[in-house]
Image 1 (cartoon, rainbow, N blue to C red):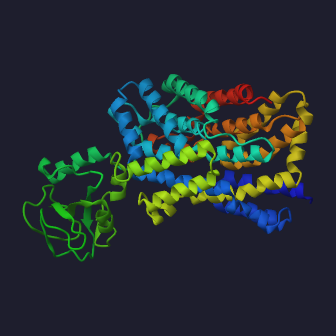
Image 2 (image 1 turned 90 degrees about the vertical axis):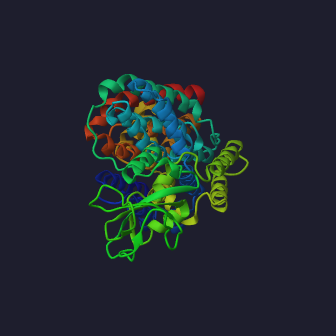
Image 3 (image 1 turned 45 degrees about the vertical axis):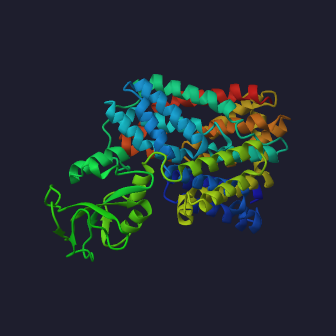
Length: 523
């Protein structure tokens, strides 16, 4: 077989593997790269070039920036603003939730924004007497719309921007995406607010094990451990509390503990001790045994070290509670770094990858995040997926496969209707995007779109912007995006719940991509 045929075969096998869900996404992506080398389509350096691609590196840095905002309580502060201003009406709640997650997803990842606000929205819904199922699909859908507000909103934006520049046009500026994204955020908010009441299920949710709200958790601890207000705030930016159980075979078994004592190594203050078979905390010293509960307070770093000991089992990890403290330790530094990074990206003083690497370095040196924390923050599945699929996009161009598809599209619709060509490409992107990663989909469609634009003598800019709009319209299935899947269990959604609201919203995105985008970025 020739190179183009092999490219189509590799793409077909990859799509089947993606849709089946039986093979990890990263393994599929690596398999694509190795297959392109094994079939002789690309050299080894070309097949593995995606792992050193500046775009991939920049995307990896965004995960660390997102972690810094989450870990320092910036996202918790945003969540609290929702709670305090939400009220009780479903439509009003929907509008506020959509706008908040849209703004947040413009600067951190879609998944990070949804994960940060998910427990908040569940709490808001319950306080308002609503089923979380009325708000969580709007949360996921609005996050996708919000990702179109800035260059860093989603990896797809970065991919199409680099592709436009590589095709001889120019890169999109940092806030240029908002010309399409802002109308989409408004339209998405209106659609889900007006239609969500009828099209979303009113269903009891399954148990959601997210991190508790810090203030609610503090009240619960005071009540269950009989801790009075004289002890001061249980959660601050510098200190917190940890509820632990004495582990089986712990070295603490047999030791005496009581309120006011301190732990031996971390110097944490014991606020209360309680036996598992007694709801009342011990009034005096208690000889510890396995299963006893101990409430300790101290600096966050010491609490983290304490619960990592095999002697105790944390009821709720301190890291999760620290994230729930609004504007906690390091929040100002994280916001400053974010502001500088956005400024560098908006002005174009340095390439995006350099801006991202500088931001990560600053966050580590300023002790906002630790080195291990930074490595853990990166979604390596996403990084490997993009790095492995980048060579396939290159292979589509070098093998002539993109020209074959583009020629077929032009032959079918003629070369006199750029709108029809844009419509066909966007529909293809939307269909594939319901079952496989929108990043992988766009990486495959980009060279085809560029070939169509070149064959018709048109600017690549409207085609690239339309693809990122179409790529964001992954609304029909829970597997279309991680954010869709993330809200499924907490809301008790079923597979068929997504398309009811997703279809009208997809039509809105399609109309914007095909009819509105060319008005801003002419053919």
